[in-house]
Amino acid sequence: MRPQLFNQLKTFVLNIKDKNEQPVFKHFDLWSENLIHIEQEQPFYTPAVFVEFPPIQWKTLPHLNREAVVQFHLHILVHVNSPIPTQPNHTGTTALDALAFSDILYQGLQKQFANLPSDNDTFGFTFGLSFHPLPAITINTLTIEESEIEHDFEELLHLTDTYSCHITDRTATPKLQKHQAKPKVKVKISS
Image 1 (cartoon, rainbow, N blue to C red):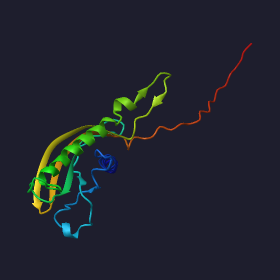
Image 2: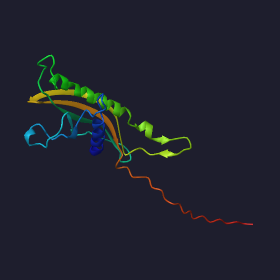
Image 3: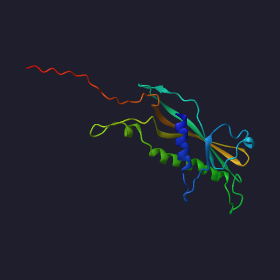
Image 4: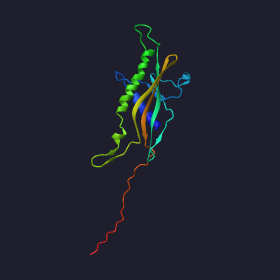
């Protein structure tokens, strides 16, 4: 389930565009305490977003399904030129400018999540009684829970936004299979 959520978030984050239709975020990856040994890390462009998955509390459902409110942290790293504007004509990204990336990410994700199908949209019988199976995983109800700012890394501003979403995982559910029925029927006609 985490790989599916990671890939969905990556697609969403890298498709958030600015007013010139350019990607806002330049890099997306898994968080692995990237700032502790920043000099030894693989270089990446900023603004960058890294996702971290804390432990998940699953609720077991019938038919080998499970669901949870899954929490994840999005670490936003932005290169800043100075903590505050130093001159009226200052160019470059300041710490105050960088704070907007948290809002941009939140708004972009809300738009993307609003377009995901929910359990109610993808399951059921339609007119003519055709059956539409549920997707293996549904992700919905995105909520932002907390934001934190850390500026201990010289020219990098580290913003951490904590989100949660409701996930239903049906990957262990046995697949329905079609079998050709070969009825063994004997008909006796009596006169």
